Image (tube, rainbow over all chains, first blue to last red; front, side, top):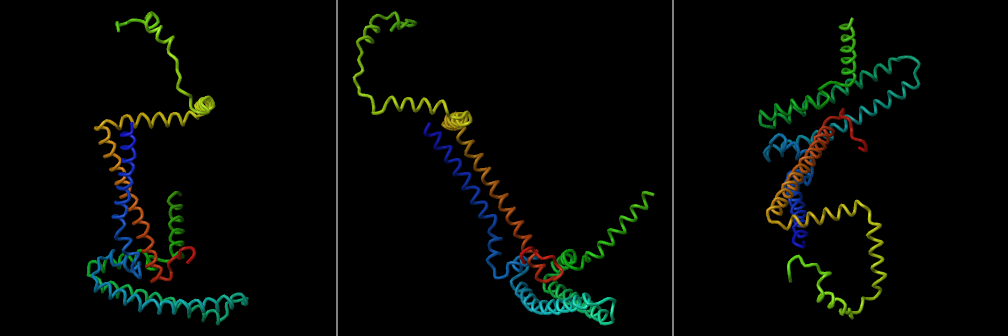
Length: 167
Length: 116
């Protein structure tokens, strides 16, 4: 009976050891990424199979892009605040509001253009096949896939057309 | 001893049993302990009894080498499979989180995670 109990306990120990060792081995690469100074860039390196040299160049581009991006966001926020102030005081669409809207739209367009430039620069740093894959991925994941507003009207139009089909 | 002989009819055995005197002292609080064990046995929930009997049956079976080897192999396989699955889940969650972090860092139009 004691032997049976010993085997019962030993089986549980073996199962726990199997679980722990495979979990530990299976998460090694992810734990390695998390220990990097910028895990999100380490993820990019792994995802797009970058060499150390390519990764260093991508990191440089990333570090150069971020402060400029932050500055543009700051300016757009300031424009948004001004627009809110004018809108709460206005009773009609004044030329001042129209100017501010145009200025803000230009800032947003500049921001999007800089973002696209950054994506293209990053893709050029990668091997050609990975660069294409990166561009396809950012196209799906970023502002390039379209804003909620356009999607909303697209869905609306589809629903409307579906209604016509039923008639 | 003759086969199929009933002990009640064995005169010699009856004689020995009559003369047998137990002179070993009982342990302290013997009666109290007996009653305590009886009460415990009566009040033990059926699930506990079932668990205990299953455990005892399992222990008995595991003493057989073939069953013991199969048990060890199955438990090892279950542990390894569960460990691999958990690692995969962990990696998927982490990769999705890192992907979001990268996108949020380069695209200000990305929806930000709560708390950011």
